[in-house]
Image (cartoon, rainbow, N blue to C red; front, side, top):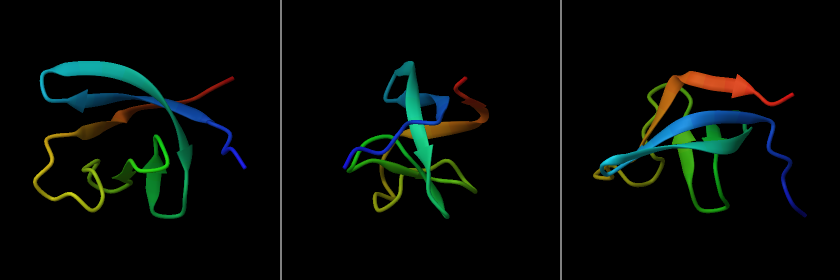
Length: 63
């Protein structure tokens, strides 16, 4: 079953910034099945050395 994307936000990965669609879980924002980002810090979950960050102030609801 596919999760419906309800929000969008800016994702910084290495040297590029892109707008991605997200859905919300109790503790994280999910981009894909394997990529989730912490709601409190914006860092990628399960990968402490990763350079990927979600800019929390950029998250907006999709209308």
